[in-house]
Figure (cartoon, rainbow, N blue to C red):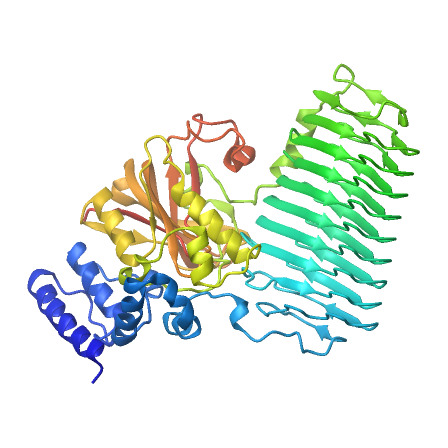
Length: 624
């Protein structure tokens, strides 16, 4: 018999005896006692010695590793956690982890003239490289789940090959989508994206080395990132060193996008004869932050056009650095820039050192504007409006801003009354299933971006890489005033943190299911936890990581409620909701979505929200 298995069984039997002597038995379970999950449940019973049944929503997240597999991988991690990468396929499979598609077969050899429908989590590395003529079409590439897949080295060295994406990533929540080295060194052909990542929340989008060094390629985005809420959109080396390429954005971050940061660096740089057009860019946006660096610099005979830029946008910040710098025979035109909007703008090196060019602002409106180092000749402002003439109609724009916060995402405590009809947001867990690792393994993996990327072979620039970086940054962030926080990389960590904060007599809750999402609901019976008194809780929110990592933090001065959620028409109970109301919001940002939706500002109102699927809140055990 395997030495590790014998050792693990002996330890398990010893722990089982100790638990039986010192802890009340939970509800009987038919699960195998010789598993890591069973061992964790015994640990739970010792740390939280009450008779509450272990909630299924948390039990389902515990590791499926057998005792022998756990012992094997724990031994590897203890000796050198980086050696886990040598057994990654078996490790990820046995532990139910979320590993990258680099471990799956590539579709590089798939027929290049293909129609893909509802594809997601597939490896398109090296797809359509050296392709000639033909068409590849994608009808719906990952709809509502966190994507693992990235298009790496897509369509390199192709000639005359056409690509069409009908819908790429619409409606994603907390996701990332990347094209890394797309269409480099290609010639002729068309790229068309009809709808790219519209109606997203918390997205990170990136195009790196997109159609660089291409000749005669036509790229068209009809609707890119429209109606999106909070996120980042980066184009790096877009069309750089190209010749005779054309890029057209019909609508970009349009239709009430909220707090979107967009960055264009090395866009069209050193290109010859390129034609780039933004027809409607960041229109009706709330707090957009647009940064252009080295845009069209060094171009020869290029044309850059913004037809409507930042029209009726609210607040935000824009910067243009090295725009059309050192260009020859270039044309840059802004029609209707910043009309009826507010914010700050800084132009540095605009058209500087360009020769024989034609750079025009037909109608320019903005406050707090600075121009530094721009060309003294060749620039024509036909209608320039300074701060004294730019009228900002904030009252008329507030309804537009409010539309960007999902209905029902935040609500007042008064809504939690029997008989109230209210909207419910989409509370679905958008991340793909993963399991906790045992502490004996997770505790040996350094919580650093470089370590996790190396151990789990995560390609840089992918959605998972960005998720890992964001998670590590959250873990390293100093706590807010009055907050205690911990990144729980194992279920044991989470239990320990909850107990250290609230004591050993605690229980954990989450909303039962997702029924009622994105519709109106009827509130049934409502019960306040601990009599509805102000209390403290520990809320835990999952992060994008190869294994389950939860950001847990103490939440002082809250009231927690359990509420029956009924169907409006039939009055039938469809869900059991858990809501948390933050009584003290004085330290929250004035731009927080809660105040955008509810008003009036920090410290003036309490703010409530549902506990979403996948998240949970711990409280002191409810009094009988």
